[in-house]
Length: 144
Image (cartoon, helix red, strand yellow):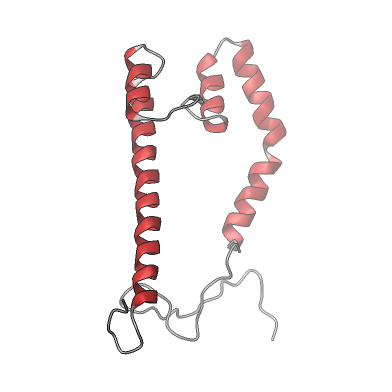
């Protein structure tokens, strides 16, 4: 049965109370995009020449905010920070106190280091748990 492209499809999606799809409905395949997203991306790509020309025109008129807007979307607002050697809290604090890092960069680095430490601790706990499980006998008693 052919479906008319102009006619929207309607379907009933059954979800469980926890928000997951009901059995028999796995949802969309991983990495697939819906039709609206695909069409929107295609429309944006079609506008690239016009958008570049408008940006060029704004820059010629001295509108540097337009350039800042575009660059922030492409490159991001932050800057790349490269720290050599020791990534200890002391090193980061020193870089901050010497003005090499902003307060936001210092906070972001500290947060990233804390999360990496947590990941390492979880891996260590997992290894210890596996060792305990190996030591447990089939009857539930600890082997010595």
